[in-house]
View 1: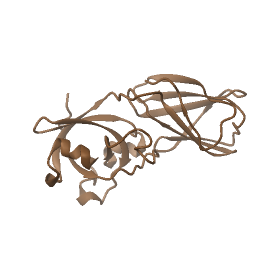
View 2: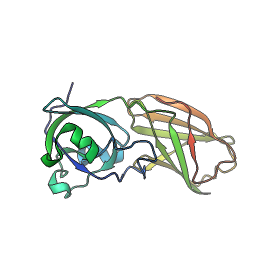
View 3: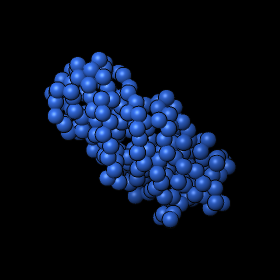
View 4: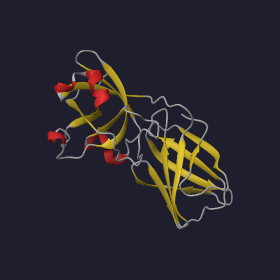
Length: 210
């Protein structure tokens, strides 16, 4: 059912603080929101999907892609407020733009994503940074491991948002397999996602999703 705790929503821009960068290029489009600190949970909620319901019964579904920092947006994002800062196109589906701020109820919902989970690899020979995005199901990832064709499983650490890293391990020249666990405990193994010829700056499609 809908969570009826005090919650308000406003509208904002499309920049993200989850590591997604250009949310249009990443496939999230305008159906995104910046979350206040209690909902953002230090970035662990990045990628989660919510259904928002206005008092007039209009509903929308968004993906969490950003933090709405405290002391911004007229104070609506100051803790302990639970707040969604929406893009304008999504806000006007709930209420007229002149409303500015509206009271809504919300609930977590499953994320329906097209295509496979995506892995964007950046970094350098001694530091691998992987952005995991376009995640279906629960949407928010809470554990990632990587295995090279010449290594065992290596636990990755969450650097920020949904960017996960390894330090002191050179994985160049190896095909990479990833294991991803979402917040609901579901996990999948994405075998040989990146071929041995992968280069930093490339993005690979895991072919399957949650």
